[in-house]
Length: 112
Image (cartoon, rainbow, N blue to C red; front, side):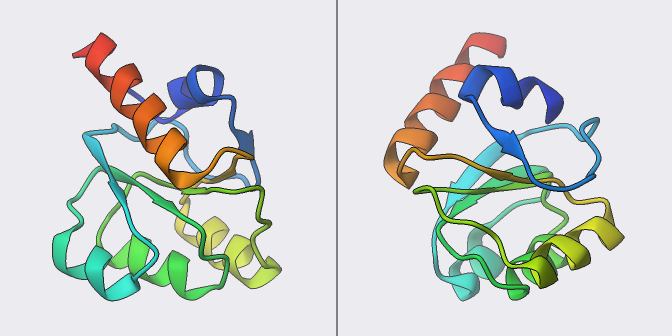
């Protein structure tokens, strides 16, 4: 599944001009950057409530496909700028991380 297919399937709002053609291999849900660095895998979508620029740095380091900021939170401009430089799409959703992860799990299961 491609990142662009998540938008309609999860009702996400794209916040920057990142690449929607990246392949999605799964997801990782955590608000701890160190956990994502230790357990995240290339191609995953990261679901988090964090909104600062270090999110883009970790997502880029781990070669993640996209970031979804949950709970109706808004990313800071520094995060959007940094992610844009890397071609990393950043999405927002009003749903909590738990619901977003469950919906993404179901969506990926339908396409597998």
